[in-house]
Image (cartoon, rainbow over all chains, first blue to last red; front, side):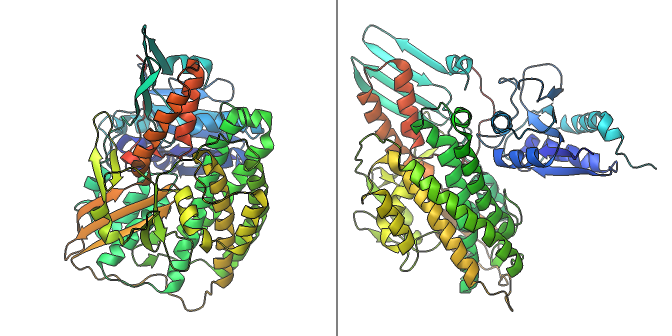
Amino acid sequence: MDKIAIVGVGNPIRSDDSVGWHVVDKIKESGLLGISCLKIGGQMSELLDLFEKYSLIYIIDAAVFDKEEALLRIDAIKDELPYEERLTSSHGMGLHMALKLGKELGVLPQRLIIYAIKVEDLSIGDELSSLMRERIDMTAHSVLQEEEIKRCMKKK
Amino acid sequence: MTQKDEDKNFKVKVGARSRTLHVDYLARVEGEGSLHIQMKEGKVESARLNIFEPPRFFEALLRGRPLDDAPDITARICGICPVAYQMSSVYAMERALRLELPEYLHQLRRLIYCGEWIESHALHIYMLHAPDFYGATDAIALAKKDPSHIRRGLRIKKAGNEIIRLLGGREVHPINVKVGGFYKLPKKEDLTVLKAVLEAAVDDALEGLSWVSSFTFPFVEKKVEHVCLRHPKEYPMARGEIITSSGLLFTPEEMLCHIREEHIEGSTALYATLHNKPYLVGPIARFNLNFDLLPTKVHREIERIGLHLPCLNPYQSIVIRSIEILFALYEALRIIDEYEEDSQISSLPIHPKEGWGYSATEAPRGLLYHHFHIDENGVIQEAKIIPPTSQNQKTIEEDLFVVAQRNASACDDTLRCECERAIRNFDPCISCATHFLSLKRTYG
């Protein structure tokens, strides 16, 4: 059976950069069985550790990009992560590097789906900007519609 | 970076007699910054490392907060050296409160600091710096050539992260450090498990040291004032007074009598000088001024690899960091062996009182200074943080000037690469220097 993780990446005192963590909190309210729901800072070594432990990973992260959509879904194993649309990270080496290094070292998971949420404010602070509440709900809903996740929902 | 990315980031304007090299994005440096070299008629006119991230707000964020928020907030300044910020902040607060910790708590703090030195140095050596000496453009290319080195680096980094996880509650932005001690002490049985991980990492560290000391280094002898902590009994991490290679000795309380920060146009970091001159903090300064305090088994390794003292070559900082990884592993094992779990309290009680507290600790990249003023209710009224990278900035630019001049007739690609190498010798953490990271790159 696949080991599955839903991972929010972010920094809680950089305003919208914490949106991934809020999405994970929202998802946990739904009640999932057998899925790890994690919140991390997004450092390359943290990500490489996750790649080795889980066969299917959903990463949810703040992003800055020029498209009109507020949310992008990227299959990071099949598709090259677009450089211009690389996810924000609090550190120089984050997801982009982890993916490339993971590929070279042969430690990528079987599937890696990234939900990139367009954010507005990345300044120092612990409040989300007004648009984020709607985007949190939208992203959580999208993740919960993934086939593998729906199978793990608790029966009410 | 791909060729496409490099084309976007690297602009050259060449006039009849002038040449400007401007790199918008520095490869493989923590955070983001840019490099600007201006030349005319084959001579370098200026060399600037520009930090164009938002200015530091963390000092302002701390004002008005209770004193025990300081370690958690300052830990967020940097994801690679959060422990350093926590250590500097808790020691400063404890001095403000006139709190004297028992020795076992100092030793446990030293243990978590060992973890950070190990993981930060390993990250820099293997992912950022070694590619320069291995003919690889980045760690990915190094992994393609020989993945065993990257795997070794990741194992060593993981060993450091394990120390931080056990002592700090998690690997990144630890949550177990507090003013007065820790929230929870480690169990001896957990330390015994950690010990096995660290012993295996020693073998990796020895192999890594042999590897880096086999690199070919450009011959450079850089004479600059070294500044670091000095303790009577231990290779410095979190305690001691501040010494300089010219013989100055002062306390953290006296730091601002000797070191001044100024803002330079075009950068959002503050430049620090020691009596109006550039100076160097970091592993080379620590090593040269505290060599005698390294254990005998580390001295043996230094002799084996043929490293001469003092080490004045910035390119050999990769060797010094490797030595410090080995030292930190041995030191961590010593602390674990000497730790006694019985009847220890995890922290001293705090009784807020008005006061000023000053501290300087040795982050992996060098001296990190904090001072705070707290009121009678324990609320922070003033905070000042001087990170190591802003202290090194003038020295880095001096090196850039020399490197650019030495490569003035080289092609643009070579010039750019050599300048970036010169910066990477210092392992600058630009995110620390401005307490924030620029998160979006735009290309004109």
